[in-house]
Length: 486
Image 1 (cartoon, rainbow, N blue to C red):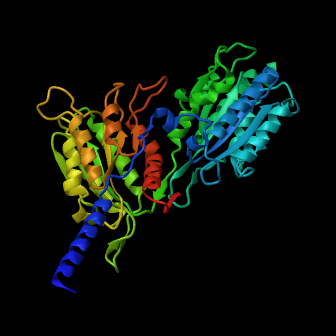
Image 2 (spheres, rainbow, N blue to C red):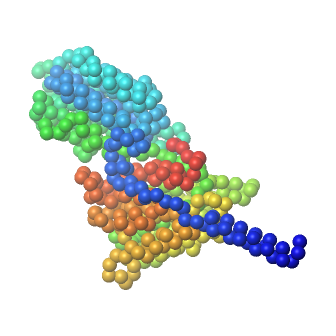
């Protein structure tokens, strides 16, 4: 090969290397950013893709006594149907049971009778068709229904249940739907009322969570103080006035079911992550503590393992930073070789806040310290910043918010092959954050602002309820395998 040929060959190789390097760092092609607002995170939907993950055993107890009209009995069954349709149903996620009561209480089906939603819906459709045949007498033996769900292990049982893999307690929930006071005869009203209270007390001691749906009796919603003794919390008591379509009542309490029974999730894919936590003074110190707990749980959702023999990480790496008017790098991904180390790094974040919200500087730190090439693995492994903030960028000395530097920095990160996904922390102003978040995020905004819809109410404690959703979406976006419910 001549000298000129060698030069040309070397030049071609440099061109190829430059093109490969450019491709490796090209901006990912992004579609519209998905906004997971309160309704998508917690609300009832009939869309299969929006079914919610609830790790719970849920039993409905439906009053079908004579005072309940047949059309209302069917509507109460429709409530159950709607809840089932809005839920991921299988033996590891959500299981359902159904009890009917009038003169006595009977198990229509137990938790282990149905392996999927279609089987449940088939049984519910059959019940609606034969609702008259299901009726056994003009009594309201509420106490027998309460006792049955506790004493039958195929329903809620008498002892707590725990996930065999995670050790987390599985929620056991009773949803009681009734139109009146417990009734056997006019001669023992007080006795059966006391018996009903006692069954409710025993259920509470057995750690059964009880919701109550109080439906109208002959079109009139009669006050029933006894129901306050049965419900686990008054916020879980739903009184259906005559102007409300009974079929729609499931949407009133579904979001509460989602909040109290989140599912754990474990992503085993290779992802280089950086958690970025807002510690500005718009977030109270107590809520900073709750955000740290959320990040600990989120970190546990991404398996961190290190192969000592080959000296390499085999799943996720996670770095941790926080910011306000300054940026703090608490830990780099390669320094933590297991999930316990990540939890310790997050726990060590000071429970303090300070002025200003320098989100642009926090993202610049992602590029320079948390996820630069020299502390990440390369080889096509995704690099993703998970930003948790409650509002807009407010730079030190500025008189107003200014989102432009943050949006610009997020674009710069993407040009370097680093994506940003946004956790919008609870904030009590309707517009704060969302416009900036939509232009900062690469794929997802998990919008936990308060006051953004009728009846929506969130706080920092609700963050733990979205851990599985956040991990599931991010894992699915950046990997083709290595994810599972745990």
